[in-house]
Amino acid sequence: MRTIQKLGEVGLIERMKRRLSRRPGVLVGIGDDAAVLRTPRAGKLLFASDMIVEGVHFDRSKTPADLIGWKALACNVSDIAVMGGSPLWAVVSLGLPPKTPIHVVDEIYRGLERGARQFDLSIVGGDTVRAPCIIVDVAIIGQLWRKNPILRSGARLGDDLYVTGTLGGSYASGHHARFIPRLKEAQSLLRKVSIHAMMDLSDGLALDLWQMSYASERVLRVEASRVPVARTAQGLSEALHGGEDFELLFAAAADDSKRVPKQLKACPVTKIGWVVKKGIGVELEYPDGRVEKLKPRGFRHF
Image (cartoon, rainbow, N blue to C red; front, side, top):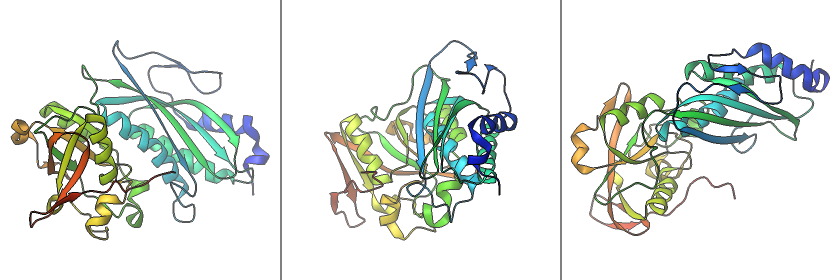
C-alpha cells in the first residue's frame, strides 16, 4: 500500500496540483511560495479560517474521507455566507500521520474540489506537515457583495430572531459532515430583508445566542415551542445544545417580518424569538409562560 511517507511532500504537492482546477482570477496557484490572485472588482474582502481535527470534529471510522474534505471547506464557506459575502479563494493545510494511505488523501481532496466547484471558488495553496492525526486547516478569502458586512453585534431592541432549517441530531444523522452551507439562502434573505445581525450555528443554538447577546449587548428571548427540532434530534435539549447544525441565526426588524419568507426552496425559515432589552443574557420561554435563563451549553473545545 502506498503511503504519504513513501510519496513525500513534493510528490504530494504535485499530486494535488494536478487534481485541483484553476479558475479565473488565479494568476499563480499551487507550487510557488504564495499564490498570485486578481480581485474581481474593487471592494471589501472577507478573511476567515477553520480547522477540523480527527477525534474532535470527525470520527474516521464513521466519516468517509471525501466528507472530511467537504466539511473542512464548507465550514469556511458558511462563515463567508453569514457576513454577506461570496467565497473566492482558499488555502488548505493538511496534518497527516506518515502512514496515511494515499487514497485517503485523494478522497479528502476529492471532497475539497467538489466543494470548490459547487461554491465557485479556487483552492490556491496550503501546506502539508506530519501530525499524530488527520488535521485539515482551511483559510478562505471572500468578496463582500454588499456595502457593509453583517455582524453578530447588530441585533437591535425589538428585532425578531429567526433560524433556517431544523436543529439537533447533527452527529447521529451525519449532517455535520454532509451539510450544505446556507450561501444561497443568506444571499436571498439579504436581498429581501433588512438583517441587523447574523451568524451560523456551529456551537449549538444556545451557545450561539449567547455569543450574539454578548456582541450586541442585548438580551435575547426564545420561545421553546418555536424551536424547529430535527427528526434525528433527541428532543428540544439537543436542538438547543447539540451543535454543528450550520444553519443561519439572524435578527431582523419586527416591521420587516412580512418580508421574511417562511421557506427558501426546501429550507424552512422559522421565527423563534425576539430581542427584549439592553443587557446580556438569553432567556427561554415555555408555553405556560414560564421564563428561565437558557444556559450557555454547547460545543466547547476547552
